[in-house]
Amino acid sequence: MRHLLIFFTLSAFAQTTPVAGIFHDGKGALRTLQGTEGAWTAPILVPHGVLSAGYSGKTLWYKTETELHVFDGEETSVPAPSGQATARFNETGDLVEVFFASGEHALWRGHALEFLDPIAESPTFPEALGPGKFLLRRESGLYAWTPGSAPVLIPLAETPSFQLFLRTDEAEVAVGTSFRLPEAGVGESSVARFRIRNPTDKPITISRLSIDPSPFRTFDQFFVPYLIPANGYGDFSVRFSPVEPGEFATTLWINDLQVKLEGSTVASTSVEILEGTLWKPLTTPYDLGSVERKSALSRRLRIMPDSPPTLAGTGFTLSASGPEWIINVASDTARTLTGTLQVAGRTFQLRATFTEFPLPRPSFQPVSGKLTSGIQQPITLQFAQPAKATVLGLLKLDFTPGSPGLGNDSAIAFLPRMERTINFRLNEGSTIAEFSGSDSVLVQTGSTAGTIVLTADLGGLTEQAVYRIDPAPVTYTATKASISSTLAEVLITGVDNSRSAGRIAFTFLRIDGKPASPGRMDVDVTSSFKEYFATSGTGTFQLRASFPVSGDAAGLTGVEVEMTNAQGSSQSGRLPLN
Image 1: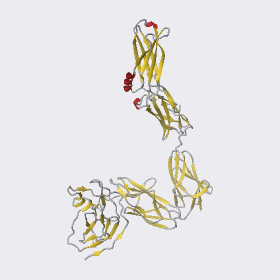
Image 2: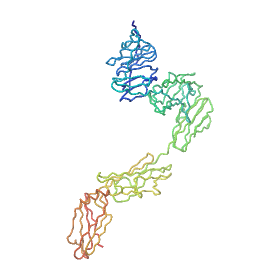
Image 3: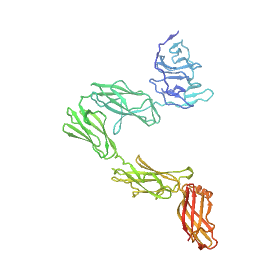
Image 4: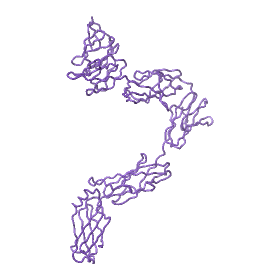
């Protein structure tokens, strides 16, 4: 005997995450297998308990107590005998036959079950997890099995557990099976803020967060599906906005958790606040605005019919001014303050923001430009206006050599500690930064051509100055010449900031000022300086040159030195021989 069951079609099945296998794990949770073997995702929450399931890689089915659900491009649900089931797929992955715990079995005809005569014993098929993968149920647990391999134990899903709390300014209050929002006037609203906490050491997926049609709405919420990590939380809020008087109730859904929401209207009392030159209805929450700390924030209220209000909150005060009321808020520190205004049984949440004083913008003296190697340059930080509060800042030095081969000269730094960062202080009422008691800081420019960048940072407000050190001919920082009856020596200390010295010339002078024999003596020092600069890490050098003397040494009175690098030549002038 055969009979057909009537079916109905639901919306098309859309799987947002690529799935390699879906199965029921024995604890009421539908689970998925994806990626490499053993990579299990969190349970997929479904609206009804799942008793059995299977997946061929093409077709998914699962069995609830009284229905069979099949997904093969669209979702089809049909009535089915109660209890568990098992099913068989063909080689192309289509559902072929379903066997029920009652002993009944049926052919799947695309959108309906065609029941066959009962059989004595239902065959058992491994539940398919995907092409070539099967689920084995044993007393010791569930196993993923690939023919030819050993079964792999599958950890069972834990039943998701979470807690719902009401968020207040001071604490979190547990919410029971029902919750009443504050009363609201028609055309106005009241608000409650909630938190879903996951107290477990495993993540929880929130797949449903909704409210049945009513004057209640969620806002400031996360979007489902939403994963709450272990020991984490997710926040959302509910607004009650009645458009007519009366008592209202509805249901808040969080997965399968149901909370009854209740609310009622109150007799309308007109509460208005002055915005500029216009009176406007006071709403909740209401932002009173923002001012700098230590400044006064005041707003005027008008209440009709007259009903004395009360105001609570740190920094909030309330005073009468004829038929009006004045809200005053004050704070010595930068922060956001919240207050609660009560008028004729209605509650208004107020907020006021106090900001830090704006920081004056610094400027460098000297301004961006050129510096030379081998000097100590004082730097001053000046401000356009006196500071309204004492501020601490940081001055940073960065150096980029003119070419990579020159290296990052460590001698380019702030003195006296040879640092590249230094703290400074801008005192209240002052326009000049203070560096350890001084109104300037010394920058040592080192001995390398490149670019120095100074950055002043005052809590996020930054200003920069850029100083360029151009490649230059050799500069002499110290010179000395001496002579004895047999030997003349020349000692030169200098800076070659491009590290390209190539030639040096010496000319000894007689008493009459004319060159002594043999005249100008040129020496190629390219290789010697190149070897020296490769290991010194600096452009400073000291050169000692010795010359044997024959004849009357007393006739020699001086020597001139000329050094040449890639930028040109530099002369020492006449050095006396002592």
